[in-house]
Length: 372
Image 1 (cartoon, rainbow, N blue to C red):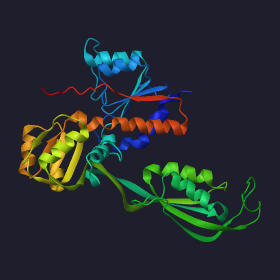
Image 2: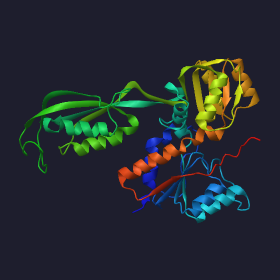
Image 3: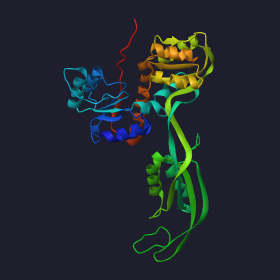
Image 4: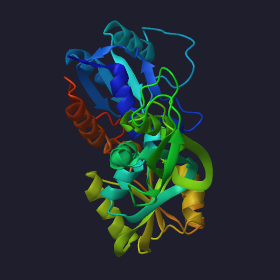
């Protein structure tokens, strides 16, 4: 059976949660409805007319794009103009369109992590922090017979992550009491009798955004009719998220050499550089797409070079004045490399959930810029 559009949305939400997106962005389901049946998905950077025609010809039911097709408010739909013509074609073909934009830039494993990995960066971290996860402590009281089952359910649902450690919990033994009233069906004890039960206090840490998921999994695994648990907020800082990445390369090289390395890694014939070509490069900042706004952040973080796209003359001038070199590798090449990764991720989701769906990625180069 085809999968519902909502299931694909849920999978993308796990990869790139919508709450990570910048306030000005337009992400999520742009066109279509959540209960739409989907049996063929196209993953692409952009939604232009060539991609739309490819989708229609290929029998696509849903497009997953990085750049939102509809970004600003619509005041006119002129089918004699490109935007209106594309929208008309998509609606007539009943194709759903979903976008993951700045949330995919910021997300772990998203655009900037893929770019940093492609360039061989080590010990990476966000260049400009935008959010930090809020954390909660979850405490549940479990009979000895089900401690491992409940622990496994919570950690598999996302609880217990501290830094690079998973399955972090703490347990202490004790005695729980309860008095089953009329109409109950207790796992332990009998109606009308005070029960003393050997129980464990099992506690763990959870991101606030996963609270409902973890608690639901915990209750499902717990044998009691009424589960006794506490949840309370913590002041601890959770995982940080942000735009861009900064890290180091394996060994210092000149800007000239690193520019060649960038060209080779991204499979592009040229880059534009700003700065002394003989400058030593060790600390590298990256931002897929248009990252000139991160020049101050990259300079403040001690980066030797910022690899991004769409850098203007005066922006490059500002960077060089702050001892930050620039490698402009283009908007399309620094972002499009995430598309195969999204495709593989969705294929994995499909296998795990037994979706009857075909997932392909755009093989048409829709980079509108070229050099002669």
